[in-house]
Length: 197
Ligand SMILES: [Zn+2]
Image (tube, rainbow, N blue to C red; front, side, top):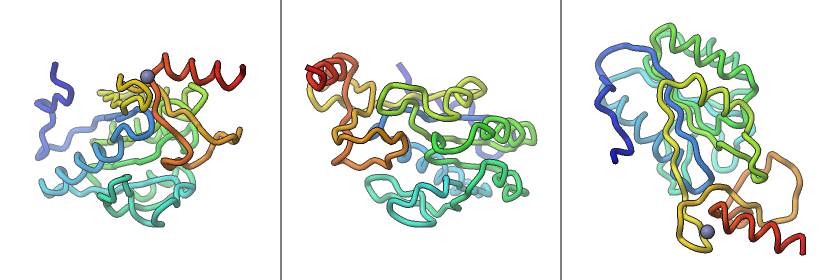
């Protein structure tokens, strides 16, 4: 099985499309986003990267993955601003898309219709397994969806969810290793049962 089939991507030609990279925490979403964006930059494409202003874990202006392989980005408050900032751009990257408003899908469609390649990375589900923010809509309208997986820390199978270890019911808790662990469906259900027993 070919996981990242890229035969159809011509870096030199302007053609609008929407690519979504989704998955749990520690699945390498941002790394994959950065890889695609760096490659486009190398092909002399004009690249612009956005992230929600809420995500200020590491740095105000960089999309930073957990292994510090960073690429410069613009923090923005609302998805509508992306259209204002993106004139004369070939490739738009969006990180932590789950934290954006529901208008993001419409913004991405408009960009793709005008010939922009849009690459979006985000958490597919929150820690309770509920589809997160605009991610379901983005997956639906995408030309291509890549679901990446972390490894379950309990059994080594592919992980399904980012299980929150700390007690906190707030949905938007910006994740770090101490607060979440990737679990497969079986181990997640086991952990839920143990916490209610
Ligand atoms: Zn497991």
